[in-house]
Image (cartoon, rainbow, N blue to C red; front, side, top):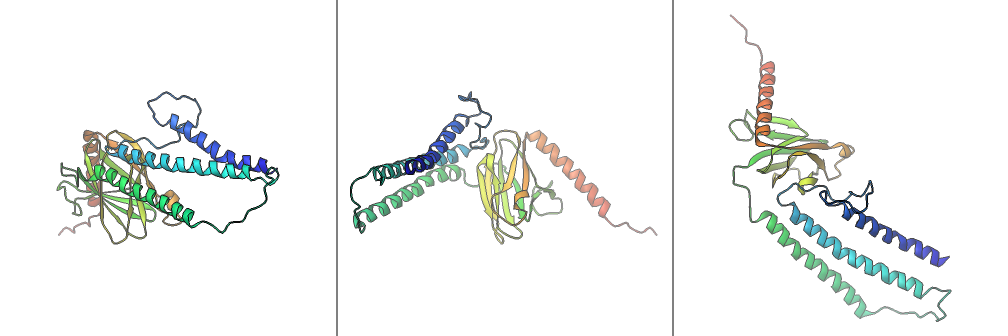
Length: 276
């Protein structure tokens, strides 16, 4: 019975590994699936960012590293469970008070691995941020304010300056042009939120009292998710918006329509002037 339970628990990581391998087969949307299962494409969302491939490479490197350690650890554990099964092991029990050398080894090794990962990820961070710095090639600047439980967005108007009377306001709908740098001025009006664009590999916490800049460039048009990745209260699950990546012409047309709508609203709200 003990071997049965041991094999049952061992099957969990084995099945998990098989699911991982199958999902990796469908990770590339342009590749033909090796195993045509309806749930095979369950891996990372499509990357439409200029710099997302570096984030994905770092993610996969850490996953493979920790996966190898996990498989080795599970293998050793399974060997100990079979080797020292009480029904098959005639050797008497031997008690040990621990080993100082082993304690030092399994403290230094994980620390060295974590230090290596910390140094290795600095290269990906540098490639994604430092060569470009803050975009200077006429970027689109948008203010995003998170609040329970929505995203409030402000676009500059005709003067191309934020927080002036001709600003354009939207809620939960982020429009950007394709193949152009976008700078987000991110703030929070109440609690901690997290500005997350999965398809752009962008995730930045929104901290009350702070304004942080996030920049990226989308390389493909379409509609994608804008979500909050920080548990921010009872309505966190519905704090979802929409990212619309469109051509420059479509983006300009959308801005014109939003400007007309804003002018109509302002005219309707303007108090009437009494005639003499």
